[in-house]
Image (tube, rainbow, N blue to C red):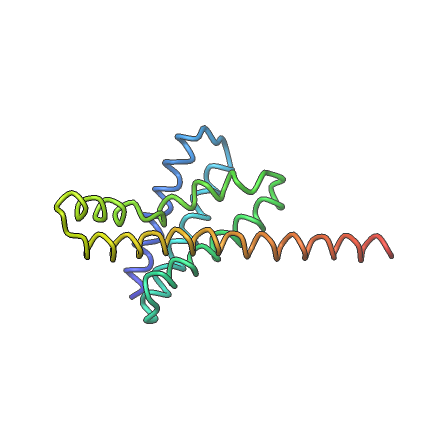
Length: 151
């Protein structure tokens, strides 16, 4: 189990690092984007191992990488999207979209519908996880700022 999670974390790290390089992220931010991707990939694999569905596992992965992105972006004084976009790439359901299109081309309407709904559900929970963390962090930091300004 540890090997599978470690393998997933390393592959997500490398994929995020590669896309960070493609997006021209420099220096320490490039490595941080890779680490955030590894966190997302590891959260995904751990929740799959614990018996969650693929959709719920993607949600937990999105929560993990969004939370790490928010925290590390504030620490590094960098926009959140710098880390978030690169780290999200390994979780994007590109294979599901490919299989959906393949089933559509073959004329298999039932399989096209099933795979299409699964793929759209995964994309939706990725967006929902990011939105949830972003909203909670924004409210938290606004309240923190208000509290500290009253002192």
